Length: 579
Image (cartoon, rainbow, N blue to C red; front, side):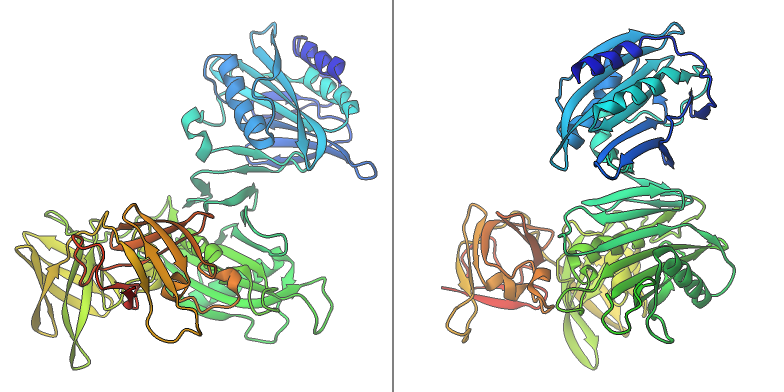
């Protein structure tokens, strides 16, 4: 193997001649494709692969689109090697390399390393061509050194055009972790992470989800999904359209089922509309859900059921669609992974935070003085009664106005997504010279600043709302438990002044998780870890990696006394007593 790898190094020094066989061009490279290899055009590259199904031997060769170079072949090589070999396959960080230079001025650096792919010995070989302000890379993974001859022959045919412009901008080393090109050695799939664009759609890829680009869409799959679970989300290709929202949904539903090769097992209605509204960004959308099965599954009763959630946007005489499909094999066939907030929440955020490069977004709020921030509490007339209510103002022009806060509090949350999911309690506000208006879906309310407090007028009556003090960094001290009969085992949680906690069932009650089964319930198991109070939110980080957060308004709490007789926690204002 070493002899053949050395031969590969030597071949990089050979003059790149015009191939006798039929040539192809990709980006700045012209080459003769390797014989009997399957070719696939991928975003940002071309993949050639060959697999022997009987022996399991394979070879994948990928030519990446050119980028602006760093002006140094060694730096260009290291940048590519670290991302494509070291981080992906735990290759040797300092591989054996050889330098060369072609007669027309391209500097060449090649390196190789032994790796493991699915517990099988393999090799990864990277060749970087650098010069004239550009770089282009060719990488190969193989598990049979017999493929080296074909790889050598392919590299020998490559010619580079130094006059063409690069296809992609250089990705700085310090941002590689957010914009990494990832390769599946067996399939040649290229996944690109970081801020995304597809057609006119601009999006932020979901954290901890793998992303793969195709010519007609993008597919996301959770990187931490158990083997016996299935869910994926697809951005579909946009489509010209001029009909109604209901017609847009029906068209997109049919397109999605055709793309996924599934069919509804039921007679109409095939799906149920969840919501139809205008987003805070100004475009109209409609969302539905339904159950389907694979077309190939001819079973009448015992077929696998799949949950479909379809999000459709009508914008500028076209429709944009995002479809999620999940296997319903949890708790029998009651649930799919979409029912798990760990997967549902990032999908919702992906859909509700979309932007489009051909759409001018609506102005949210007009703030012509210092914006309000923080929480205020007071009384509001409703149903003939005065009820406790809270307002939380954000410097982006948003306001929360309601009697109970979101269950997970505000810290680290996208408030625009909150507003889309709970239009009743979210709105915007304007403010100029201490006076303004709170704009809610059900009406407008005059607002004025009086000292540290606010005066809000509802139903022609002024109500004073007092500003709540910041609770950031506050701590608790002591063991707190619920009163009552809990079947002989009292649920409690202990806090210490150094920001640590031990939970024995209390957090599971405070979390108010009623969904079965327990795999959806992050607080089902007791545990310990650290806690933090920030933005009126109590955040628990378990030592095993779990994280849960809940509202803490601080009502009745004095941070000077970390051991009060009771604590009021969660959106439900649950009371725990000191033991």
